[in-house]
Length: 124
Image (cartoon, rainbow, N blue to C red; front, side, top):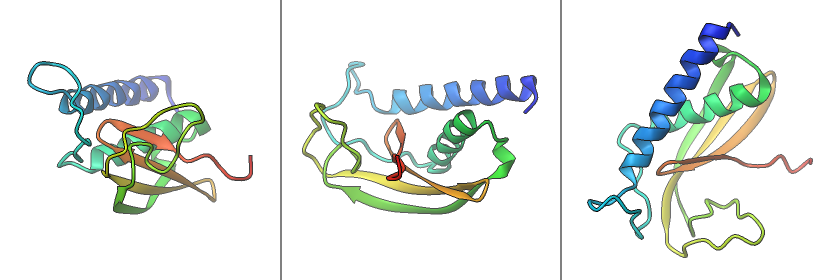
């Protein structure tokens, strides 16, 4: 990946993150206690997942394919990927399961509101 492409992708990533972050704030600028709503442009969450995978693998975005995107309601705000010691809001959370393919391997991401997280590979 060219250095200029990396800066362009990083800029797009930061812009998308800022836009998604603004969507989760209430009128008073504080985070809302409701479950996050999915943005109307679900493609932005897929792009964020692809950017994350590109940064982790070093592969160009063009070499990362979207296998599937499924809308789902998670049982809590952990998106089905809880971290030990972290408390999560016990509220039905609308989100996405995003499956990406890169270099012959599939990667699973979960997304909701402004969050896009990679599901750890069970082989680790």
